[in-house]
Image (cartoon, rainbow, N blue to C red; front, side):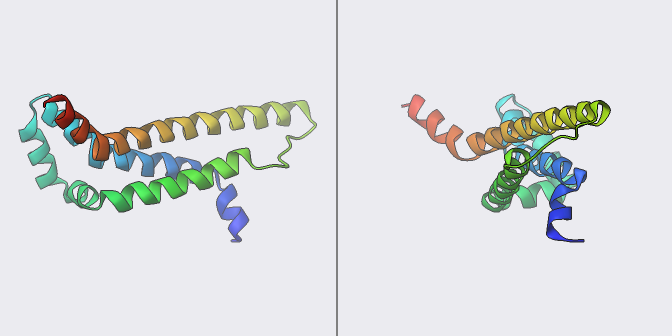
Length: 131
């Protein structure tokens, strides 16, 4: 399988959503649960699902890999010289899939920014406000 076919694979777009969701699971969800008073739930999740603890310990790598994948996905979606077929049925399907790809991208990007914000900016902002 050539590199172009790997990138054109429709599953690649869903993989980016999954990887971006990993940033949400490692960084945003535990902070939200602890803030709401569910620290025991976070401890239980980390004990029962060791992968979450691994992602949290390596959040820089998790966020960086997700960012690189999102950049590649953005290039795939908005690269030049993309044309839909002339046939009306295929053109409608092409436009529908492009719209779905853009929604998946924006959802993934939003999840990534939530993970980034809660990992690196939330605690310093909270400490500044509690002076």
